[in-house]
Image (cartoon, rainbow, N blue to C red; front, side, top):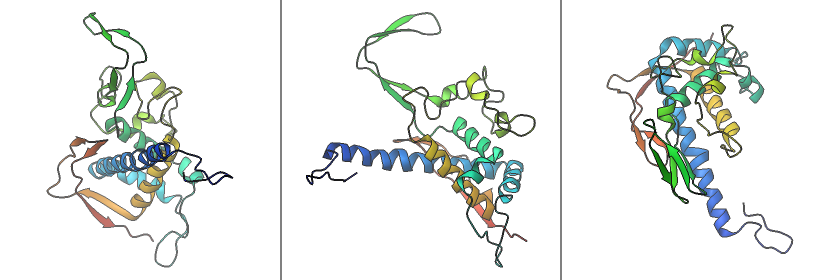
Length: 234
């Protein structure tokens, strides 16, 4: 970010440095922690899915020391071989997309609503697409308001790559201008979930309620109250 060229001049301008730091702090941190919070809540609220995921995750933490702790963290390659973990992340982002998608109209655009009425989005208009709605349409998703990671799996528990192509699924947007950091975000989410679920069993706290999304820069949950119990590995 602050690299200088051979003339000791910043390669990036101060505005570019400021813009990149906003991206790192917002897109690289807040949205990921938001998604992780929702994922932990869904797993705590669905103990059968949690147990299946722990069995899958434990398979890559295959060697333990005398204290029952893994001798090495899972690699990126290990994480790619966990279809249920991938499905849990995908289902979390379907139910709880971390942030809205915004675009700016480059020219006047005529659109039509469900009743067939036409209206114009003027050039320069800021447009927001709310994935929370499209991700929960009954026309596309069976039991759209329920946490069902298996909807992203085939019968043999392998990932179903065709699924998101047939349904409006876009937690990171779509097309050539989709989120450039989504591979890193997915890796961070999977790594954090793998370590947490390997070490702890989660349950909602006695006074817990389902998290309510607050619209700040992202759809941050108001609170996530969980009870964590340390797991014992033989």
